[in-house]
Image 1 (spheres, rainbow, N blue to C red):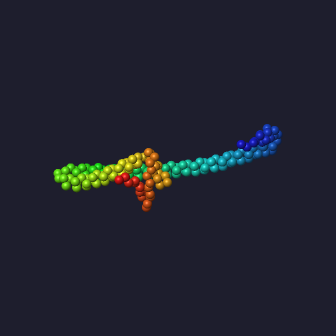
Image 2 (cartoon, rainbow, N blue to C red):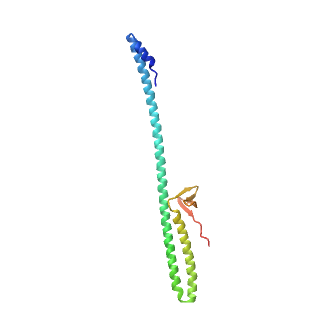
Image 3 (tube, rainbow, N blue to C red):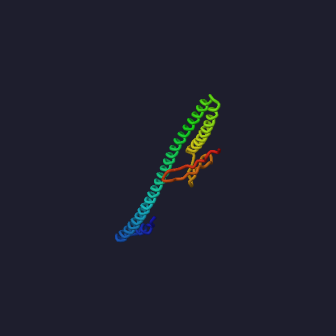
Length: 174
């Protein structure tokens, strides 16, 4: 704040009009300079606040886009897991029907049992893979350093190739 005590003192002690006018001019100049300085500082602060607001808005928009993208990916892989689970269940049902139909003769039953066993094993493998998908499509995960960290502290590797996300699923033990 401008120190105007000298001008006020000169104004109080002024006897002649010239002294009064001089002290008034000096007082007005100091007040004007203080107002200009404060206006310039205010303008600078408004600019900095606007820049900070713009940066915050950009960060918020980027975060929203990342959440939307993660939700889209999750929905796609949940649908994929549901489809694989339905296929696995159908394969199990088919295998069971084949095994029942083949029970009429011993040789046919043996052949069908082998086929049904293979189909059941394949179906079980597909069901296991679908279950793995179903376990990690819940929204409790983060993606970091090309690894998907899941809520139960397990991870799934993935790669991005030609703007597509490919997961590397572990194979079921034979």
